[in-house]
Structures are given as structure tokens and as C-alpha cells.
Length: 262
Image (cartoon, rainbow, N blue to C red; front, side, top):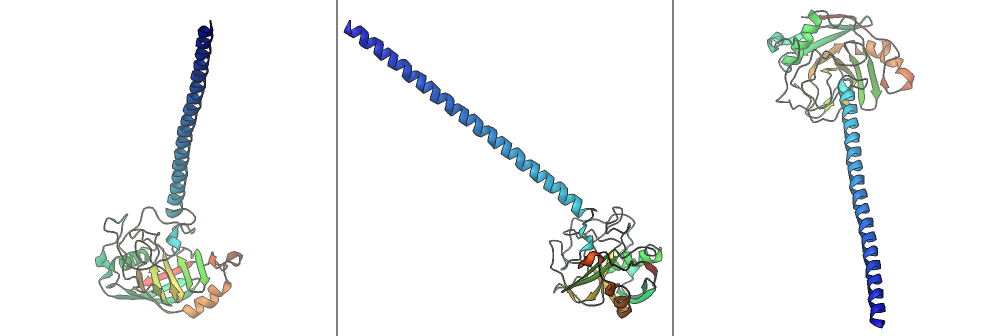
């Protein structure tokens, strides 16, 4: 009789141990499942963040309101994989010589000298834009005036600073090795980190400006302003920038009223 009771007790304890073991196994399995689910959710979340960041960056750097074509940069390394887009004039148009002319802003004539030998592709493009009348009527949408960064940028297709999707070229030519764009420099604007995104836009440096290199290099220097900077300073730059900013639309609306080259 005693043996029978011991057997029942042992059996009962065995069942309890099995029940406890199964419960622990179930809890462990649930934790593993939840951990896997959390990992999947975290991975999906990371992918969404990356996708959103990439999309935002592509918009910002390819024609959006903050297109860095409005922000000159320096140093000179061309993208070997790049290609011109649109009806870009051949480098032979620059004739490897010096060109002179005038760019008139708000009826303020600026004498210019272009170096077709140092920047043949960029000068050829600029000459083409002058000769086909592209510049006349275009605005100078951006004025930046702070310590070490003084530029007036002009020539945007729509006046917002956005690039022309149907026209771009490279490589970068004649960018300053020391990253310093001296007073009077005329250079071609482009998008950040893209040596083949030069376009119609150009910027005039009205005070020595240092611009760090980006991964593509610098900005193509096509020439210099030889006269008229003082009048430009008085007539446009001294008027300041919208909302008291140091970089933005000039308070004095500025338009290219004439352009000649020879």
C-alpha cells in the first residue's frame, strides 16, 4: 500500500515537472518569436529611413529648391564616367584664346575676359549662351555676402536656382588649386559632387572667397570681371539680401539686360 502511494506521488511530481518544463519552453519560444519579430520591424524601419533619406537627398541635389548648383565649391577632378547632356557646344568654339565682352546687370555693364585656353568646354558653353541670347532676361537669383563667401549667381533657367535638366556638361576646368576664388572671378555653377553638372548658371565673386573642395572637385573658372564691380557693389550688393540673411535672393531684383562677347 505504501509503495502504491509513493508511486502516485512520484507520478504526480513527474507530471508537475513536465508541466513546468513545457511552460518554460513555451515562454522561451514566445521570447524567440518576439525577438525575431522585433528584429524584422527594426530592419524594415531602417530601410524606410534610408529610403526616405535617399529620396530627400536626390530631390535636394537634383533640381529642388536647395539645388547646390547655387553653392560654388572648389578643386579640380573630373568624373571619368560623366557625359554631356543636350546641345553643348564643342570645345573648339572657345578657340583656345581670350574672349572679351560685357555682361550687363540692371543696366550696369561689367567688362569680362574669358580664358578659352584654360577652360575650353566651359567657355564654349558660355559663348554659346551669349550668342544664342540665352542670358538676356535671366535673373540673378542668389546673393551671398558673408566673411569669406561673396558671390552673385545668375542664369537659372526658371529664376529659382534650379538646373536645366536638358543641358549639362563637364569636366571641371581651371578650378583654383588652393580653393580661393579671388575678387572678380567668374565661374560656372554646378551640383555638389557631380563634375558633369555644369550648366547655364555662373557666379561672380565680388570679394575673395574660399570654397572647400567636394568629391568631384571645384568649379570651372572661365574668366574675370575687368570693370564694373564697384558699380555692381553700389547698385545691387549694398542693397542686401532678403529677410536680412547672408545668403538668398538679393533685395534689389537683378536681371541680365545684355550680353556680348567677341
